[in-house]
Length: 262
Image (cartoon, rainbow, N blue to C red; front, top):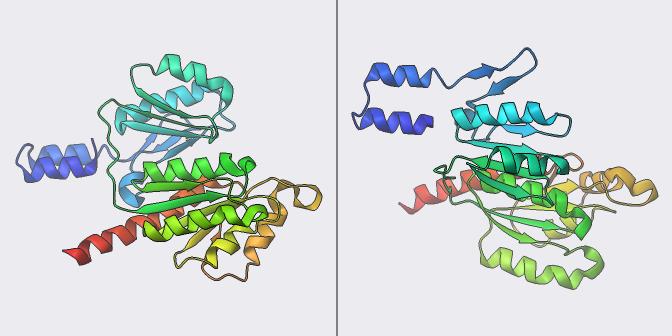
């Protein structure tokens, strides 16, 4: 149950003011142990769902956190999921809707009746080469879980500039609100896209490249030094951060677009 559900039940007279107060009090930080404190109400406060960063967590820890999130919010998103956990998740959460995105290393687990409410925002996700897809996919799934519709254009890097033309055409035709552009090597793609469209661009440097470019440093510096205005940059490989930023921009644009059309 969400805070919106509680308020709707109160307005409809289905619950008393006292019952509503009790239920609202459940939306708080929940401590599972001295090491684990779950931010149950982050989505309500900020529009960003709490996400389990799976990189350095063992499976039992992830399983415990996931069950609690499903109980309290109806959904759990796991990023940087280890491949060896896929079969375990499939077995332990077979009674839930399990959405696995192997390329993006994300698992989204939901109660059967959980619905992501679309906010009307539209986010384009582009990446330079297939080595950048893992980061682009993390960004795309996060934006979708925050209620945005996404369009994806992969392997459209500057080494084959002609591949980018249809993507830019579609972005204009679909009236996209914001674009996420992930690129490794020299990280030129976000600058190029920013010079072609009139929407905000969120650049994501990817840790792909040779020599001085390895680890994503060259791509990061390239995006930070871009001469194309309208480009902002998140940290190396931070698809999650890019997805959140783009979704918040697109969601707010959609809200005012809806208001102005009334």
